[in-house]
Amino acid sequence: MADIRIGVAGAAGRMGRMLVAEAHALPGCVVAAASEAPGNPAIGQDAGALAGVGALGVALTGDAQALFAASDVVLDFTSPAATVRHAELAAAAGKALVAGTTGLKPEQEQAVAAAGRTAAIVRAANFSLGVNLLLALVERAAATLGPDAYDIEIVEMHHRHKVDAPSGTALALGEAAARGRGVKLAEAAVRGRDGMTGARRAGTIGFAALRGGDVAGDHMVVFAADGERLELGHRASSRQVFARGAVAAARWAAGRKPGLYSMRDVLGLT
Image 1 (cartoon, rainbow, N blue to C red):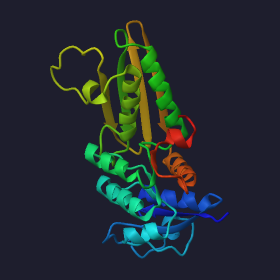
Image 2 (image 1 turned 180 degrees about the vertical axis):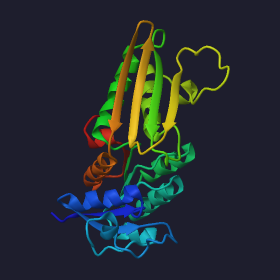
Image 3 (image 1 turned 90 degrees about the vertical axis):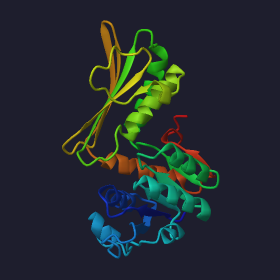
Image 4 (image 1 turned 90 degrees about the horizontal axis):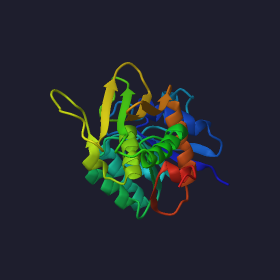
């Protein structure tokens, strides 16, 4: 079988460089194209050299259409607006897309989902195996530990450069808890507390976001009751786990029929 041609959007960024390195290292895959936003000073540079794996003969382009034309699957950890554009290009080109960008607004998520009608799109807030198992555990725990006795709080911490809060993974954990409880997260979520807030309202799902240092990603879901507390958590010590999972998702998505998929599909957890 021919190698899967992988394209990397945002290839000059920290995550983009890691994706290039992981895709290059995985047997059966080849880095075929890489891109950056028009005007980025890295355009024209070799993607492999930027990623520290040696020259690959793949120069960064500012043309997103060219990225998709040269690739079977595109990896996208960029920005919300760019991810929507890339989803549209994937649909137009009939190519697969693996999107891990966080901070998308509801209408942007809807646009990505719409592109999934004509392209295979793997959409996840977090691509690590551990986090995706955690999501399943949280949903089950929330279904078992009812709101009459157990309060749910989600605490996350990330590096000082992260621009969105709560993290996409924290929100995904909140969605898992809400599914387990049979409620809508938008109606149950409390996205921060300050001042005289009054007593905690039963059935709510609280979020707290911490920022500092170089933390790759810590998440904890707390089920707190009178007399006991259950804590389910995950800590990532390196972004490499996200890159590794994303490249595995790319291999899975290549040649897949159109649809909006998740890591639960990739890992066979559905």
